[in-house]
Picture 1 (cartoon, rainbow, N blue to C red):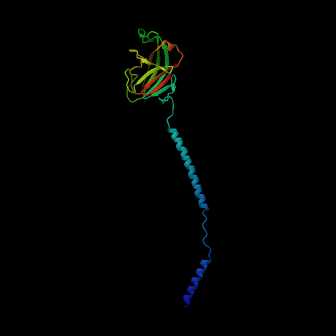
Picture 2 (cartoon, rainbow, N blue to C red):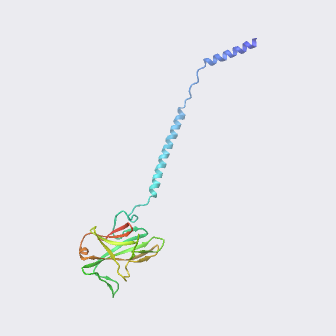
Picture 3 (cartoon, helix red, strand yellow):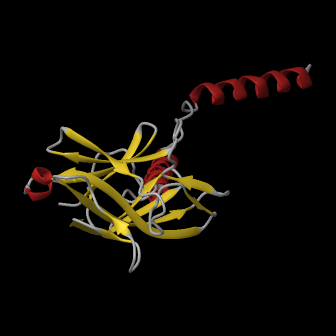
Length: 214
């Protein structure tokens, strides 16, 4: 009987103490929150740095834009500036308006009456992987052709001087090889004596290079 009373008393005291004890206080997480904020800020800073590095890498891998690389912008090249047209690298080095194109001491070429020759010296490099013909007499598709544009309106086709050793017509050029020669145009005296702009237009299909020659 005493043993049962003792157990009951201990149980009652335990219940009383539990009732008198203060409720559990919430844990202070401020330090952990500050740590998380710091981690987030660090990740954001790292992300910004990675973004800048990626933009810099993309800018570095973009091809440089230049007149020599772009064959369809419509920009006009000057003498001794190289232009790229398909597999051809082309440079105009000199121009001359003349009454006579000399082949040797015994032969040459004379234009028709009231006309003069416009002789344009160019250098051409074949950057393709096989031999190709520059300025073929009978071109098709994307074959190279040349013309003179006068006053942005009048067009003069090139003249194939048969037997001219420096002529560029029908020039077969091996890959990674360069040939220097002359493209001739027969133009009226009025055009030859004018001070208006003359453009050499070299085309391949719907792409072209334009060189200012006057």
